[in-house]
Image (cartoon, rainbow, N blue to C red; front, side, top):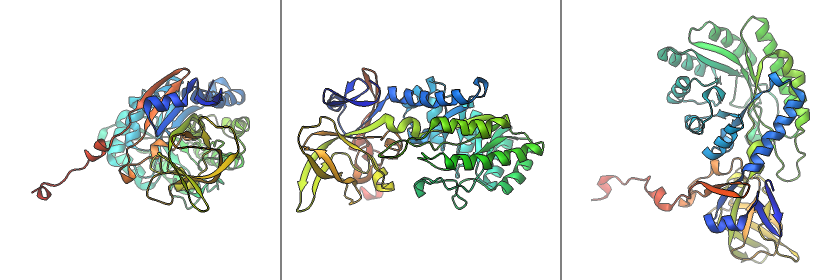
Length: 424
């Protein structure tokens, strides 16, 4: 089996039963399916290969911020993927995982001098420039290092991605990117600079898109501006289209990958540049789940609460984005459905995964799975309430391995220091 499916009344990850993983590694536990990761990459590649010539296939640079575990990055790297990073820490991660520097693109509006220097010295594919001030800083650092540095200008196309407002990034008042007028001026300046190599244009309009209309609108704007840049005799080798492809959390219409690839074929391919894509959630989202256990069942006058051992510190998306994550019983019981509020142990009312949710009768110590938690799950976890970070496990066929050990309270406390004047 590939991914998460029931077999003989038990939920499996690939060919490993989830109860066996819980008993071996404990809960809460992030579980990733190597089979599903590969399948998602193959689905995207298949659509691109049908629409685009063999010698014009895009670089797929996995958005590291979605899931930055070294084992996940290594697996994707073995499939030829690059990486889109947004911090110096992520640069270290992808290089440690074996992603070649010439397949790494660097986004983000607030890169520090130290982060920029690391990227310059690593000679990554491109640094995506988000502002005039950042461009000037990159130029100064590149000159100090004596290294010509490839850059791409992030264009803000002023397109509504029709997604959650907190993950939309391509509207005129979002903090990301620059206007076309500003880029046009800076592109000339960078072309004339001895230590800058303008490599192309980049944009990213948002995350969790299932409708192709915003992609088409944004790509048409990018293509028109790219043509204007080329018509001025300026070099433009790469168009980085960002990411944004969504997944099915509940009842969304799945993204039409063939239509997506055909949009790229019709609008971007004729420009003759290299092409880069930055999918994250699409590859990792449904390839992971958060396995947890029922700690208590609390019955009040009107509500029956299932209190889990996992909380908002382990999976913050429901509290932060009002996001939906299907809750599946790992070993469902027969009988009538029961309505629950599924909550965590954190001292916040917001620590609620879902309300008024029907499940088979559930008892204390039963295992539940919060589905589609492979993207923006563990990477956004915290130590709120001094709760240790959960462990992560990768399953591949009938094999499983711990890929991040469970944090302990002692690990957390060891990061703190009491000043000497408070110990006397």
